[in-house]
Length: 121
Image: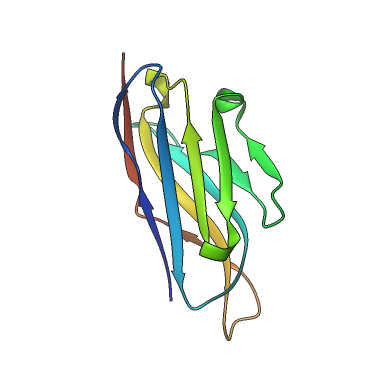
């Protein structure tokens, strides 16, 4: 079907940067929105940022001005550039994509396996 594979997480000091990538593959006809969510221990999963196929973006207030989401439609890949990282950004980051596959006339959401981002103080 469809797979989302994330990469780029890791351990970084406060003030540092990381870049996450998520590539979608499989029987993909189209992808509308792609985005990044995160879940910290003991907290609910929350939206970090998302982007439409036309490039319109949306950010959580907590990351505005520090994170930038982008995508390469030809590669079915979404990126998250994270700058000025803070300890409170520590979480597992999940990629999400709304995908229409060949043979199915509607979209479904798909999730990546998650990548750990840890920011030390």
